[in-house]
Length: 306
Image (cartoon, rainbow, N blue to C red; front, side, top):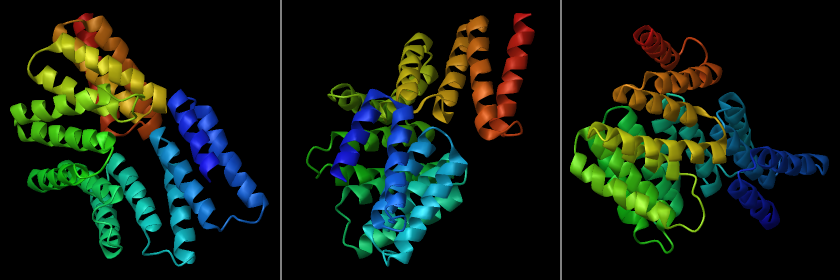
């Protein structure tokens, strides 16, 4: 499968989302045609498809693909394997992203138990579980647990070789948690360290946008709106490059609108909140709270502008 993954990585780096999906589905079709639709290779490629679909905010399709991969691993006697735990981790990430933190936490903890049973406490996958648990605890407002998990993850990845990607992810998680806890000085330190790592990477990284958004939020809280806008705009570009106009793109558009609003630049704020509203409505449906919030903001901006 090395050729499959090498081409997949190249397509991701090129930002060619249509070709990424086509490449994955083509490999699945080949396996189906050769009678290997129940193989471990098929399950692994399904996991890649599900991850791609999650990234472009096609959540129903993503969940279906993750569930099918889990079924194949389970039927193959891989229920307590690292492979099974990896898919659990990815599915839990989907649940966290779609506002189901309790379901996400349950799967993350299940994946963590499997990795411990497999003696994988010093592996990248285990660090990934800790980082995702930190985000999930943050979503539920349990900041002490979130901070503990994030610190444990950062300490663990410090022992890994070539750990820039994992260290940057852990640092940004720490920055986000400190920000939520109101500890601006620690949040700034962690955020700046994460961005330094991302900016020195040889190739653009998929998680750089999240770190830029964290820094922008810190700048916004400090009243540095112009600097915040620059970070949000760069985050928007990176998100579109890797995932297209997905839910993170919509959230960044909303943040840009709020920043322009704080600057009193209503016309620009309207443009970006309209973009956010259309995307949130398409992805989440017309009744979702985020859609209602964007509608209310657009109505207020239009009223003030008028």
